[in-house]
Structures are given as C-alpha cells and as structure tokens.
Image (tube, rainbow, N blue to C red; front, side):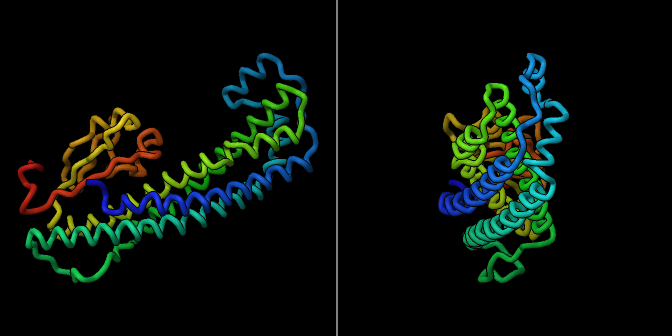
Length: 289
C-alpha cells in the first residue's frame, strides 16, 4: 500500500510538466535572443590546459565577464529565478493540500476502525497549513528556483565553451543544441515536475500526520521502498525501518523524517519513490517496540 495520494501523482505531475516545460522554453528563447545580439566570445583556440580547466567548470575570466554582460545579465537571472519561485510556490501549495486532504481522509477511516477518541471534527477537512508548512513551501520554491536557473546557466556556459573549442563558433549551432533535449527539453521538465510534486505531497502528508501524533493517536512510522531495480540501495536497506513518529529514519547515513525530506542530499531525495505508513495507538505498539 502506498501513500493515499499516490494514484493522483501521475496526473498532477503531468500538469506540472506542461507548466514547467513552458517556462523552460521561455527562458531558453530569451537566452537565444541574447546570444544573437551578443558579440563573439572573447576566446582564442583553447589550449590543452584550458580544456582541462573547463572540465572542472573553471573558465577564463574574460569569458565569464562576456557571459555576465551579454548572455546572462543579472537582471535576466533574477527574473528567471523570480518566475520559477512564483510558479513553484503555487504548485507546491496546491500539491501539499491535495496530499494532506487525502491523508486526512485515510486517517479518519483508520481512527473509526480503531475506535480511537479525538478532539476535532472528523467530518471536517485537512486545514493544517501552518507556519511551518508555509515556511517549507517558501524555502523549497526559492531553493529549487536557484538550483534550476543555476543548472541551466551552467549547462549553457559549457555548451558555448564547447562550441568554441570544437570550432567554428556559431550561434545557429548553439541554438540547435538548446532546442534539443537538455537542459530545456522534456526530460528535464519531467524530472523537475516529478521531484517537486513528490516533495510537496510528502510535506503535505507529514503536516497532516503530525497532528494525529500530537493528539496521541499515531505513535510511529515505517519506511517502505519500491521493490524494483530502479530503487537506490540505501532505500532498499531502509525498507521496513520503524521509528517513533517524531524520530528520523536513517537512510544511507542521513537522517530523514520522511521520504524526500528536504534535509536529505540530492542523491537520496531526487525522484525518490519511497513512502511511509503510520503506526497507530492500540494496534502497533508491539511493532514499534
């Protein structure tokens, strides 16, 4: 059994993919416009040392200055980040609400089956969008926006430099590459959509579940990995791990409160498909102990 919102993930991620693809294309087109108006990069035929430094993202100072002045002016980068932050904020909040609402409905069913007492209206709805969740949404939107734009700029920088190295330099050649798959193509838009949708839904679910823990009905949680060859080894090892609800899981040496926890490294979080289930008072004490 997966998370209660798991069946909705594909539909939501597909809508997010279309929105994210659109903004990636808009930003790609702006970069192409800047390149067409820019002067030729101030680079001679690169030496072997230049090529080695470029592999470590170490470029000549005059090339970096040219990029900053003619291809990636600060105003453009700031506008790109602001656009992503605004769009992500909307999606993160909406997805968290979907996940929280569905988790709430599942929790009420469980409470009824266990005949647990509670001090809130079980016929109500998920409304636990507190300051902590809003702070997370704002932080996530800002952090992801910076990362997305930074990755785009890094890949474009490398593409331009590689074009100069391979010679001859041609804006048309760069434009053709940018209109290909990465970093502005469908695969990246899908990766961003899936990562952000899963992260926001995990946060919404956790915001719901913590309320039931604070009311004494939930006592713990159990980590579940997806059983296929795409699952990370660390996540397979964490499968079946049980913790008190307010204690973190240990996943590959990292402490995560739930799958896709923002405290985790990219290697443990991006496109993670794991989930947790709740341990309930009156039913799961033996499992927790």
